[in-house]
Image (cartoon, rainbow, N blue to C red; front, side, top):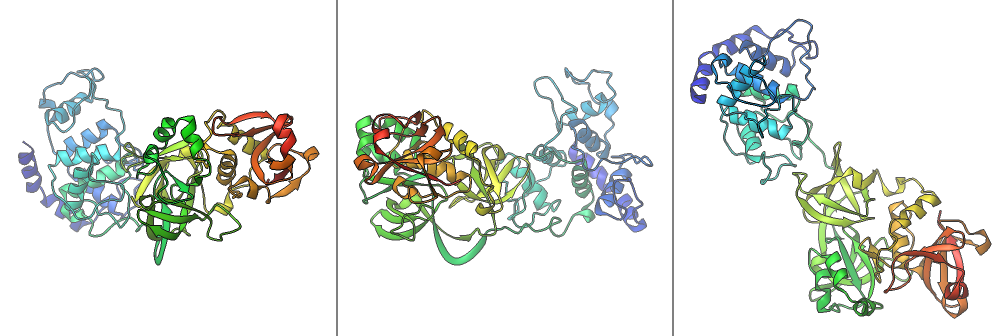
Length: 518
């Protein structure tokens, strides 16, 4: 039946040629005279697909509904809707004026209902709309080019490929199709017009080429390629029980949950810190399947490159990309999932305080680049974006305290800097990092930065320190002052993040001073 309809379309193709020779009068007040869309709507009008009413807009930017799409297709195919069998839909009565169109599109098998309803007023996403129009006109074909956000396993991949292969649309380099956005009436009309009149089909991309902020350079950089990597003080030191933390991908929650208290205690003095997904590191040494790296953003006075440690070689990716011209996204939720381009498939769960380059964004997602797996989607509700790290506004003390309190009752993890587990200085490093302040990683270095504060002048948000030998020796612990003589801290391997008095017992005895970074 469709083939007969297409044959009829070919017979009356001379109408289109005549229209092209005669020029195109303005069709709608919201469509520019002489524009490509104006030509396309004129063609649709000649086919009876649309009706031009003087002074009435086409509503180009409105989302198209299921009924509007059905009506355009049925009218353009020149189907007599009055002869189709009346289907039974709960939401469309038999005498509804829209029923003939619904009956025709249903009989053609181009659009059908769902769970007994046709949903005529439901708006179509771009992915849904292209699948309908490709089905209606039996388009097929494959193309070597595609859209940056359409993977081969996307439900609309074949339909979009058919449109590209038939030159209905032509993707620019790195252009996104935005399959989950609503299909505009103007775009849907353009696709239909180009299918029935080949002379309207574009010969080059119609959108401005998307220029990625990421630049390929001749300089190789090294970045963390797992959600979290432990930096060990010796290579190949991990035990069998640590396997989940040394694979790629890592399984941090399973690893931590599997550790007994004695196994957690064993980590003390063997792991020194952690680095998060996308963190830049310097490559210092390679030994077998292990590499000694330095975490660039974690300050230590004895090594300019950053905090050193050994990590599995599979945890580090090399890249030639430079992101200096890109905005950044900082994870502000406790954990977040990066998503595949279909916005449904989970790619990787990452930690609070993770920082990734933003390549682009839309209303719901940041499009972030990953160390070795290309662009992924990040929900805007899970992160905040800034043009550069230095543009993050200075936080208030109450913000820092409130953020740290989100991790109350989180089990302690020696050397932890991720939201799967923190140590005493790691939680403060993460909270301050998320708010634009890179304090040193370890407590004894944190005690040398910021501004010294007398105990009587303490304010919430200050860092309070404790040292051996009655507070006169080496600093070994840090807490976040929250007021009323209390601090938030992660005490030890057998404890959790908690709030308690700093003026009792060993804390009163070993208090050594305070620093203010705000």
